[in-house]
Length: 209
Image (cartoon, rainbow, N blue to C red; front, side, top):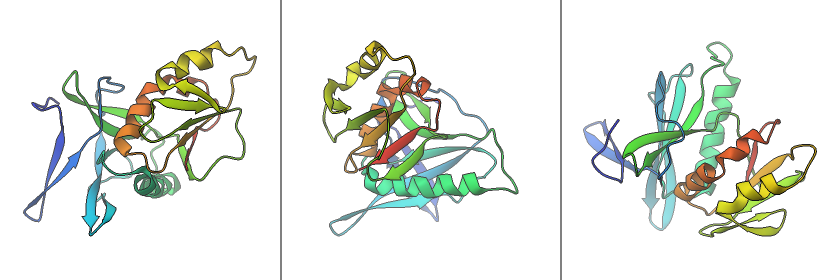
């Protein structure tokens, strides 16, 4: 699916009006194609001085892979509660459940100039801070540094740092993200540390604080 512009915009036609979503951007493709999918959209809206997240899931089918197209300008404090509701609905589905159906976030690959995806099916989100975890990695808004158990590490060095720790048992990693961080920055962070997915044998946990 090729696009002529580096900024990819979804154009939807609904009741004769066009809607647009500015996707997050990255120079890496994690997943290049998803078949048998339904699209869900979370739009950036404003009302006076307030920012709102508006969800459109009219065309979603519970048995398909879900692709969430989320405006990169939205803060996590508005996005993640809506994502949690969608996840909960799909996980609780009994009559038409498809165990192979996955959930993906979409974003724009600025190098390949194509649409790309990152998997998040197994992630369990929570609002607040964790009470346990062998390794807690905290990301702040618009900051190139992350905090690994309180130690400042450049985000690009997190994988090397975790690999360098001599542990007989792989640590349980818990991720924390600033609630005011934009969804665009969140996706970029997730792509940067995607190799950490191999460390957790337990259910991945992410907290919005």
